[in-house]
Image (cartoon, rainbow over all chains, first blue to last red; front, side, top):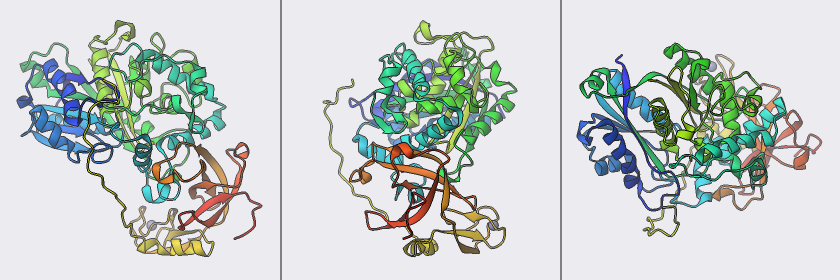
Length: 390
Length: 149
Ligand SMILES: [Zn+2]
């Protein structure tokens, strides 16, 4: 296996992007990523596109093909990766693998999603079907917030966590999103705002949920040889990728206090990178709902079982705490364009590791120059954990 | 950039409804009409499957027998769904729960007949067959004291 580095990153403005179609949106991430790497589209040997809703919440069924043509990437090896909300990380894994195994010298992971071309109820329908349609949607109408609400109620019953505790995740992540110009929701919120927002699937309310967002992000990787040849100033190395998965039916899960896929994927990544969670300078974790961030603290080993809320309340996941988490606003407030999220997490890790955080106020202090991205697909149906090191 | 009034073209509409094969789990769907909740059990390794599976994921055996499940469940978790998908928009908000049966398998289904404030993790409920409002056979959790049938 060859060493692989990230040499170029781009991230579109996240939000309701009715001003662009999927190809134009992809271009907004591809262009800055290529310029960042000092490359042209013709230099890219392999492209993996992460997108989950092709043909459902936006009109194109073959988004890899249409975005590649639009961005001048036609001719490169091409595929679309689907791992639900982890599609972007799956695409990154494909691009990384193509370079690591020697098949390509320069590869691109491109995440893109257009979620706001259909109405909210239809979007709930499509995303609710993203489990086991036959056994858990057809007769029971599960929704995506409902899947995580099942975990939230079990967690609250077991550890005595409250709705106020969950709300604190939203308050924190909105605070950082307000400092991030690419974020979808840039308003600061209070615990009271969360508690008084409408119930979506109890105990989760509107402000416990990530928004439906349009967005794209692009990551360009290269071999060590190519990094030297191109004289890249600040390559950010891929230290490890860990992955795992969980059952389609939630009724087949052993328990509802943690996501087993997160535990397995992170342990695999820590082992491959030869490091402990306490050596991480910061992390991006999958906070599609507030409860998900608390589960992630515990599943990734940032704190002990049942200690997630205390860890949050102590400010350990803020800048200045033990491990700043989601200081770009997270999925919760930066937004969650499903297939783009994994690449957007790696965009943020790369920017932070280069000490180029968009706003200095949210630059994390770096000691070991190591960051982790934790990207879940569905409700622990897929999980990718990527560790980067400068 | 975030204006909803941006110019757009409407895509051609499509209506999708798939015919989902159930020939291998027909006993399960027919069992519901007799108020039985059936699971499958592997003839080779004894693994029990709910939802019923025609093939054993544990030992790859394709010889399975049908077994009737007990009805008493312990509720492991639940949620009350207020914002519903399009295909459930004709329903009032509904409660979904996951309950564990004595045999060790878990079932996800609607929970009805309780006041929402009474619903707690760890409580007991009864799993019964029912006809859904779409005239399809389904199953749900109800209070233990609710009479048979
Ligand atoms: Zn078997």
